[in-house]
Length: 346
Ligand SMILES: [Zn+2]
Picture 1: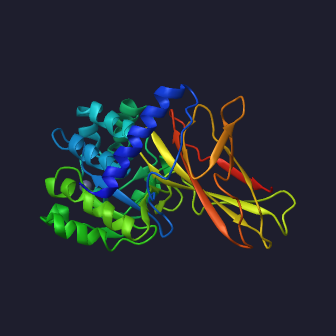
Picture 2: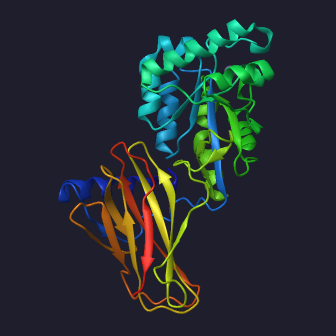
Picture 3: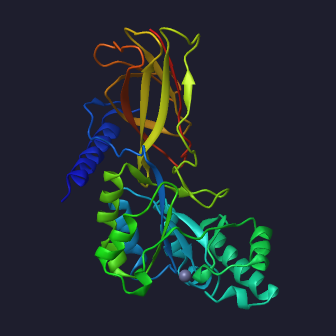
């Protein structure tokens, strides 16, 4: 078992214990449970086409969830209609779902009416299963043209191709799939498929490789068709302290990891052009989110339970330009918006 998996299990146990112990707003100040995944090099998108498939989709979802990553599934419409519970399982596991046509034809060889039918029926089948119509479309075989693009636009769909082909459809071994994923760069998208054991088996090594390169699994932007952070944000945003200038501080938020029901966030507090002796950061989560654990900082809450004030857990000295971080876990309760953060001194 990887040390990462051990850490994740430890965190799950901590989170569960805190929830039981303290009810709605569970508070647990602990030492950092993990050097959480560092996404400083950016995000890539894992994609799985041609499902859902009874006997494989569940294994695929379990492997992704166990490794703490989310992926995008480009489903075939007629399979989605035949297996709506698997489409629901994809959604419930925190995955994103795209349209991959109704029958997987060579769309560029079909009439406008036929293409429209392929896309429309699939939108409907996925909407019936999940309540939401897809925003992303991947043409079978990556074959596209102006006619197809104009029809995609009528459905509000963003066309998504890929930057790396895993070749899993072509008999690639698990090692070869892992090797292909190791070439992913920030914003990149890897093509894989629902239906191969080799592909499922590659997931732990793919995730370990991405972590080693400070890359994280993200979602596909509907504006660019490229990978971005799971909450749709691109780079983390910084908020200047009131007053700014010397003696001030800034707080910067980024998401470091996500599971099916919760995510970890990290705030970097940085001193301005002068040294500071202490700081106070404010983290506001959006109801019904609840913070269930905090590390490397001392938290307190307002009466709503949505505004968390964090002070240094030790001394708060920071030299000019110096920084420190604290982390926390947020139970999403269906709300995945990123918290807003700010910092003030003292
Ligand atoms: Zn396909």
